[in-house]
Image (cartoon, rainbow, N blue to C red; front, side, top):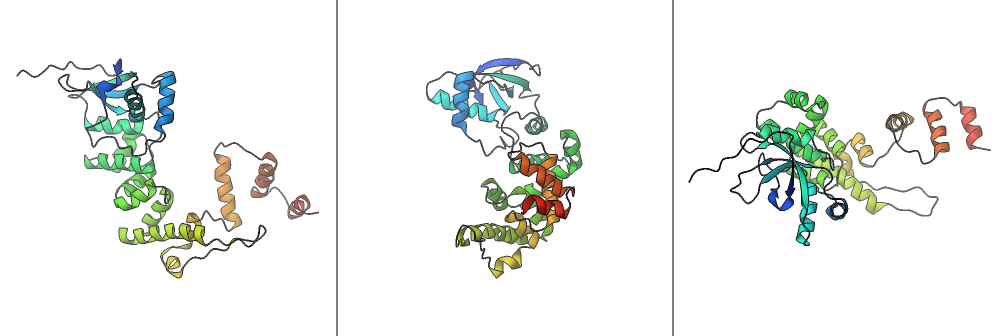
Amino acid sequence: MKELEIKDETQGKHYEVDVRRIRPLQRAGGNPREDYGDLEELAADILQNGVVTPLRGFRVSKSEAYDWEIVAGHRRLAAAMLLVEKGHTIRAKIISIGDSRTVTDEMILMEHFTTNSGKPFTPVEQAETVRRLQAIGWKNKEISVRLGKSMRLIQNLALLASAPIRIRKMISDKKISYTLVLDILKDSADYNEALDKIEASFGIVKTIKKSTVVENEDSEQTYEVSDEVHEKVTKKHFDKATNKVDSFKELQMVFKSQIDKPKDVINSELFSFAKKIIENKLTRSQIESLIFN
């Protein structure tokens, strides 16, 4: 049988397609997204307003059950399919990046980083994309240059990508922070040691939650942490796991990072006072007069 001819697609051309004729990414390892977020809320918005942001994908053979395979817009497609299951007909605009013959795995993987306009990828999902780029021969420097990302970010994601699945799953499950895992991985001789420290850090959080004793509203909280945990985790890891700031210098660093990032101030008077303290604009006598009678 003569193979069905596929006409070359013009990149950037828009099409309007019934979502039932669109399938999720199959190529290049599939969609790296694990956390789809609240699809019901997105589906409600689509039902009201339609699929506002176009999907991105490439045309597949007409002989198949689908006309298109997408590389970006999986959350929108999944939410739209929820509506289809309820009897709605949903159409979506799709931007062509080519057809199945002209689109390469490199193009697909780059799309994950450069064109995602919806829910941001988590660090674990970004790390998986870096791992796939490495698998096709890209070096960290090439990934950094071609994706327009800092070398430090790519190195961190590559380090995370090389970690055991168990460690990455703890981040995905929000049991431990991505930044704490990176600190521990950099400080550890091997993954077994890192895993011990990570599980110990996770144990600190659980221990604190379970062992907090509050005698009355004015009393300080008492934390019980085992000697075994202390042996495995450095003070830096402990402070980070418990979100603890125990010196004025650390407080200055934390506060400066908050000021440098645009954020809404909910207490302008307290903000102004704290900012002056951190920037050393108040003398001791001025501070005492403002706080004490």
